[in-house]
Amino acid sequence: MTEWHSYEPAVGHGLRHDPLNAIVAPRPIGWISTVSAQGVRNLAPYSFFNLFAYRPAIVGFCSAGAKDSLANAQATGEFVWNLATRDLAEAMNATSAAVPADRDEFALAGLDTLPSTRVAPPRVAASPVQFECQVTQVLRLEEKDGAAIDYWMVFGEAVAVHIDRAMLEDGIYQTARARPITRGGGPADYFEIGEDALFRMRRPD
Image (cartoon, rainbow, N blue to C red; front, side, top):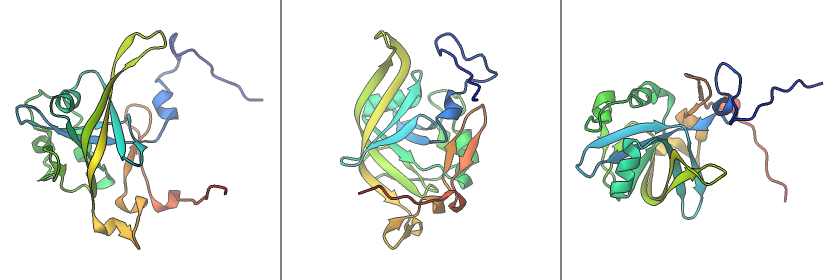
């Protein structure tokens, strides 16, 4: 018989580390570049990130606390998502440091940039995929009783997409070829997506 560890999140999990972000994992990383109203560049990773719609293409990231990416996206209505890969993992991690709002994380991590075509925030030049996004909604999350909590969901429509052609084969994007990294649980767990993780299963008609 299965022995269950059951708990109510509001009471506490009773474990050494909160298991939620290890269970809902691995999660894609929202490596978000923004520019402040004063023109300061910002780059930060978010593990609460995903694609939510095809057409229009809507992506979103969730800010725990009123961080610079949130403030910049609200002020300018723009952000860029950059694909985080194994080769860029250490640089991505460096941009997670808590630094003053006037500190440029691109410079901090030693990252070159490319200009965007539709929005002001720059792209991470070494990233094989970038989405230029215009903000569509900013929602503050709420508890079940309607009380606001310190989490903000930022949604944006991808108005321009850039893909390194080396990631394409016969017109199909090869997910594992970029060696994307995803966030696991615990204080330091990440996973790399590789070909050995691939299996195929078509939906029933």
